Image (cartoon, rainbow, N blue to C red; front, side, top):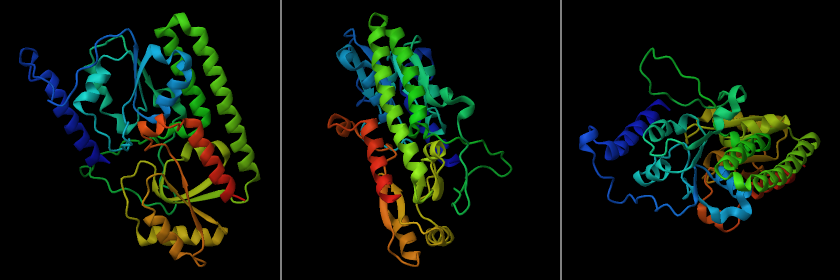
Length: 337
């Protein structure tokens, strides 16, 4: 994690240097492929880093979408944990009216971007800040492979928080209300409409939340086994699921040790688990290795979508936060019988 943080910080510093140069009198042009923000067309500009934020905004503004220019920053399915903003991304953020981001360790580049932003009146929504003391520390659970750190000897480890706050429907309701408040301030003339839209949308969140709660209450198998990273901590805590996984949610590790594979396989056998889970865009190598290490070698492998790789194209083709979460509900309903 520390090495990854250093590399991302260095990359961002290089990008920011393109705008600021070495001093006020030595400003340099942006990179050749960077496009300047569009001329002011009267639209309210909103930049969201990840798909859930983008979709929440879409549902809140709804009929007034033509009044807004809404950008999904990670529009090609880039992973939040390895994302590095381009010069064009920084330009988009610089003059937007509202910027929404997760606010975890993967977003440490944001501080520099906002410090150099042209619009100093920008509304900024930090999901982790909204979580406050309810943000959960990332945990290394029994059997899980810890990530190797690259810090200096004796250096005190920073507390790392689980960034995947959007996978809780309860959290989503909090975030939508915060977005709604900011949108209402930006466009007070249509505030009542945005409030009504948010109310209707959060009712849908609550309905699905209740469905998940009922599913968990009646589930035959409470522990979930992940042969993969585990970004669903907020989700499982909401419904009382236990879990075992190969890696923590923000881990950069991809190769599981023999000990981790054997541990997970033994848990599958011991608990009579029928399904091993992976997340979206997984090569499933670890899950398959766990399956092969079980006594029966007959466990199913199912995918739960963490929405870390949803593209703008998929959104335009109809993918929504609720449709993805509903699909996760269907997968769990089938596998927890």
